[in-house]
Image 1 (cartoon, rainbow, N blue to C red):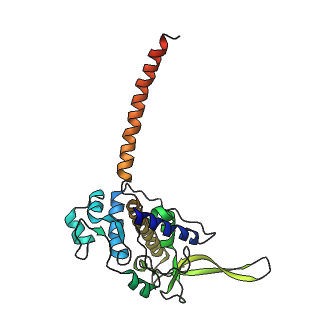
Image 2 (tube, rainbow, N blue to C red):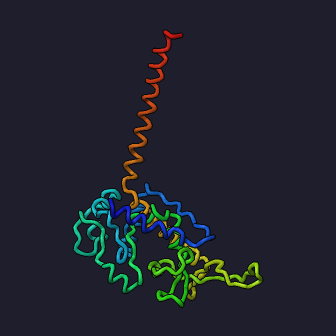
Image 3 (tube, rainbow, N blue to C red):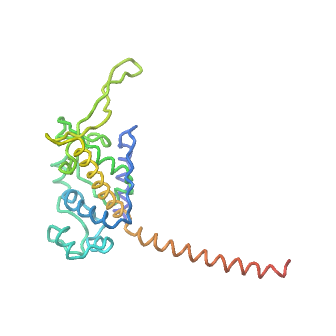
Length: 251
């Protein structure tokens, strides 16, 4: 519990870094879409888990909640010698990560609760080419992020489009206005649009999985909540009838 609270507190200051004045895109994810969650789990273990852990989740719990058979889980989403009942941790040490990246990649168990799904969705859509950075990319939502664009094979790269604006003092500045995909030679506009749409669906599945991981008991809580409300409604009918019976003699 102490580790969970500490992770939340460490993530809170970074909420302010989400690039001021930039509207977030809506993830519109649905944690009840099992196919989306299964794809998101596959994406996370293949693209994210080399650097980011889910230290409060267990492979077995994920497999059960997402209706993934354990043999398929072991064969396709577990790549080292972990046991099915172990936590979803990684082998990278913080000291090594600091020397490689300059910052240790955070655990993502509660990232969806700390930042929100819209922030994660917008962040993963907003990488653009920036040769001045060690990774070769920057991010519109989280400026100067140390994270590389790990999903570049699925999205491709984007180039920044700048607009010249004049401030109150009359000085001109270049402001990043939008991002445009860099299409490979021979790719039509229609093919480019289809690729970007596919990437958005991919990111939505990944965000959906992180949303589930942040509160895996949400399924049971919502299911139980429906029955509790039905019980209260049923009880209200009897309570109201009993109240009328007691007050009949008074009137």
